[in-house]
Amino acid sequence: MTTFIIALVFIAGYIAIAFEQSLKINKAATALITGVLCWTIYILQSQTPHTITEELLTHLGEIASILFFLLGAMTIVELVDSQDGFKIITQKISTTDKKKLLFIVTAITFFLSALLDNLTTAILMTSLCAKILTDKEDRLWFAGMIVIASNAGGSWSPLGDVTTTMLWIGGQITALNVIKQLIAPSLVVCILPALLMATRFKGKQFAMPTVVPGTAKENRESNIVLIVGIGFLLFVPVFKTVTHLPPFMGMMLALGLMWIINSIIHKSKDPEYAERFTVARALQKIDTPSILFFLGILLAVSALQSFGMLKIVGAFLGNTLKNDYLVGIALGLLSALVDNVPLVAAAQGMYDLSTYPVDHSFWLFLALTTGTGGSAIIIGSAAGVAVMGIEQVSFTWYLKKISLLALAGFAAGIAVFLLQH
View 1 (tube, rainbow, N blue to C red):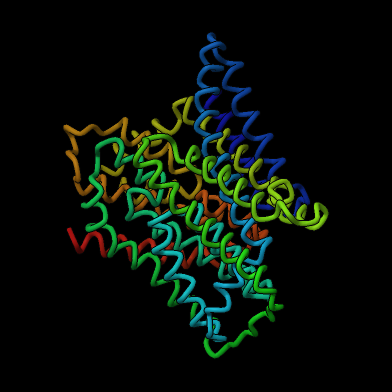
View 2 (tube, rainbow, N blue to C red; view 1 turned 180 degrees about the vertical axis):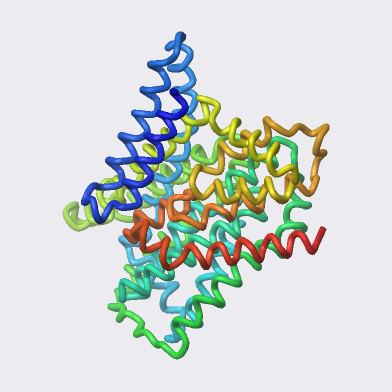
């Protein structure tokens, strides 16, 4: 009975998020209520509430690491943006053809997400597109493509997506092999939706925004902030690899150093003028409701995980489908509804290395499907949630316009993987 009630609350919360615009209730409020209710139902039926509290705090540590990472990345991007750092990049883009711009943005997002990670890349590229495109509808389409490209790019790199990183750290895959085996399927996951979307922009032009030329000193400061900002974002995966600390620690170090450099740049300026470029101002401008929305969603999913519902689903899929690839596809599609991290964690618990040894095709397939399946729904991935907050993409708009493109790429990527094996 408890399982049914928790599932009902989760589904009701999901529906309320999907119809946010019709209900006129902010998705962050719905997500927070859903998360708290799931844990409340779980603890009330338990005979050992102390154990449940400890489970919650353990999950909260994992959730907080994602939220602080998101907060740090968004703040650094906002600092770069506030000082016109992106104008240097926009000035280098000479095309005024929307179709060409789509391919440029897609390619940069795909490869950058493998170097950084899909979440940071999605934030960076969405902020960049907001500077180039003035039409809201165009920005929404580009935002959808950024979600697909960042998730596809993250799936073939051990640093690009948290699930691939989990499998790498867990010893299920090796770094070189996941790159070799998944780069081609991941490219197809990205390229097919881009080609389909490009037909919408055929022959359409856009006007590059007029950039007010700054003084030599202002341009120099913008260059410094851009180079330092991107340099620190690139430093985060290196810091993680060297220290084995969670990525958010590297992001917090990057933000702290960026804060100091920013203070040095503006220390001699008039306090009122310099205040526009402070970290405090950047923190005011980032989308806090999206971070709270992410908190609520992850709390709800962690309740399902702790209650054992995800393992039950995983075992059910294994017993019903009785095929490695069908299980991988099902988990990938399920990751669009439920966070892919607990799904992969459940799979790691269900199948050990004696069943599937290191670099077995099942682990590689799981990295591909759970990394890219989340693109089917806007809240199916961390990158999607971040983009949703920055561009205010509605759940239903994404479902109508982008989901089929994402699923087409997902299916094509699976076909390429199966042909390889």
